Length: 166
View (cartoon, rainbow, N blue to C red):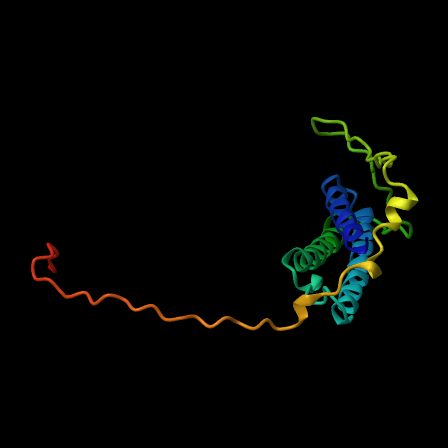
């Protein structure tokens, strides 16, 4: 969540900068930087946890690293332009993001979970008891069958095979 909110505030800051609201853009990008730092710390903790799935290192992926540099460069640009051109005060509260899209071809449809099938009764779900499953025989090494050698016929080289080496 922190990662995606950092992306949202980064893009919102870029939009505010393009509409000459540099003070609000700086505040939005400062929030993006804070959320990115929090996401980075969470990714580091995730990478150090034990268990399945620990080979994934989200903080090492390109899309994650790209956001950090994008937030940093955009924030520096906003601060530089605010010092030279706009001279706007940075507000203490976050600028409001417009969450309803007013562009595109299709109206977004909110997701709704489908109704549960009447076939899924508590008795059906109890039938999936994993403690009653058969023992795993795959753990024991299987004895390999010995492969018998097959005698191949002797093939004598022929002079007139039709092949030429050029």
